[in-house]
Picture: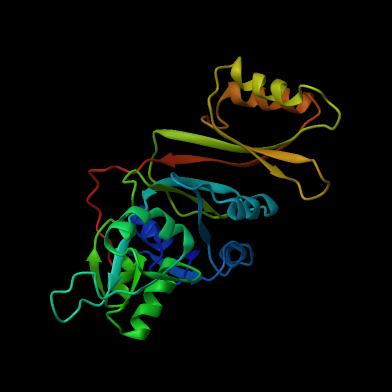
Length: 291
């Protein structure tokens, strides 16, 4: 049975997306409290692969997770898109009070920020208690067993902890999606994909005016699309950066291979983080989560 590490505790969007992506019972899902633990579990062999949220429509790149990917050496094996649908979760009040009895929301700052309009309209006076994940917030609400406390989290978390979904999909932007990547040396069999990507890490040579322009030109004149380019500090010297680049092509492409060779010829350091299938979320998908 394939063991999959994810950012826990149980009930996070990471777990929900992994259930959606693999969609069968031949996997064991193992939660870890920190993304470094998720990654290292696969490095040490405790798990076969790790699921890592890397980018969100609203909040952009998860920089800590990008840095973890760069510092490690596990290759990217796949990516998929999954909607981040947050819900108001708690205990239904005995009477017909709606949300009026709730005085505290327990969740993470990112989830709260994504639901500001709903909270402003329905719970303008609510206080916030911050925890490490949405699922941890749901777990805390279950422990407190009070109708005055609610969490923001996934429907999977509500099911796992036996709580009620008081309001569904309360995010301000309904196009809120998260991009997940699968990392590991021995991935399980994956379904065929229409699209492939390659992620490269480029470090420019020092004192080379126009180096970044020349790097981008190596892809541009070959008409290779770059879906993402992000600079991050190397953490070795002030003012030095690497460039994290997603390329919409696989290493089977002769054009991409020649672009990479041109970039290296410029004196740049280039590392391939993975060449992998890319899966989009289908809005008509009716896959059900089985817990």
